[in-house]
Length: 146
Image (cartoon, rainbow, N blue to C red; front, side):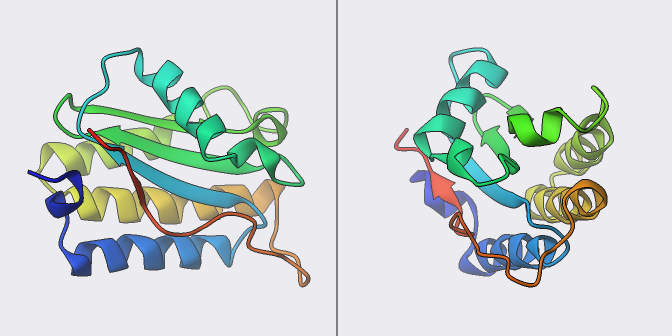
């Protein structure tokens, strides 16, 4: 099955709308990348994708990547240096646990949507939305080739 077919068009729209809504709270940039497989350590793979998507190029270094490998049941949230300098080490844990809880119930779209909206709320405290904010990264879901 093609990786893009795991989600309906309606599911994809719901997730993309969550990204747009979350970014209305913050100058942070949120992306979602989905692959079938992750043979590496999940954080190493997420870091590779983060760089491949040029997420480290934002002005405030405040990009956030939600990464998932569907078949290998791997998930990670990775924030850029600008975020990690300002937040506690366990900053992403609550969001990650919420998302994984939904995944265990078979609710992938709901888990991602909830996690993305939570990330926007959390980032708002450190990177509030600016009037002159520019959307520096695409809000569209990126899909791996595997």
